[in-house]
Image (tube, rainbow, N blue to C red):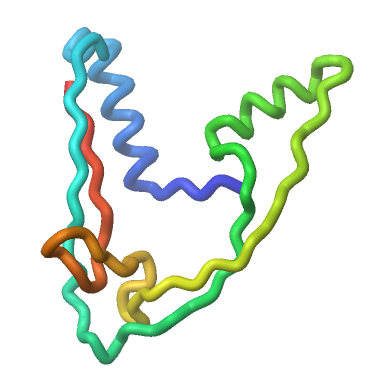
Length: 114
């Protein structure tokens, strides 16, 4: 099941309205990403293990649903693996950052502008 927050749903609605109004057209885009540190104590860091599915990306799952209607299409099997990661008890959506001079617990932020 795809998890979508209220914030992302609201952002999608804003983008949809901007496209309808002609404010954005998607012909020229700029994208960038950065790591943002989480404001957490080192004492809150924990090692976790989670089981994750290795399959097509979630947006392609909708395409699979359409293909299932076609005769002869077989959905690829879902594989699962166990991953270990470092996170914070107080900021569980954060993860371990080790990129150049940036290290610790934080978030990956990606932005695209038109």
